[in-house]
Image (cartoon, helix red, strand yellow):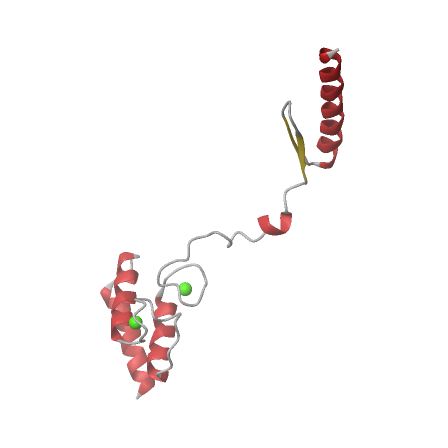
Length: 128
Ligand SMILES: [Ca+2]
Ligand SMILES: [Ca+2]
């Protein structure tokens, strides 16, 4: 009797499983319960930026820290407008300390002192 009941449950699970396989759903089952998951949420999968670690020094959100980020920071420093995006050392101020930190990040990322100095010079020229 007990064996028969289990056989019926197994048959039911297999039926649900076949239906789930046809729709691309995932089925999970054990002797106590059956759970059918829907197909993977494609909208989520198409947006891989979720759960991705932010890149340190990436201020314009293009996924990498580069000289454009430094140009953006220089512009903000010249405008003297505080923005917490650019306060990369999180001290509540936008100043040279943030610029120094960004320089360090860029050098660690493979940029040379010369490349950075060039950006600093061109920024100083446009300011005068
Ligand atoms: Ca960037
Ligand atoms: Ca700061």
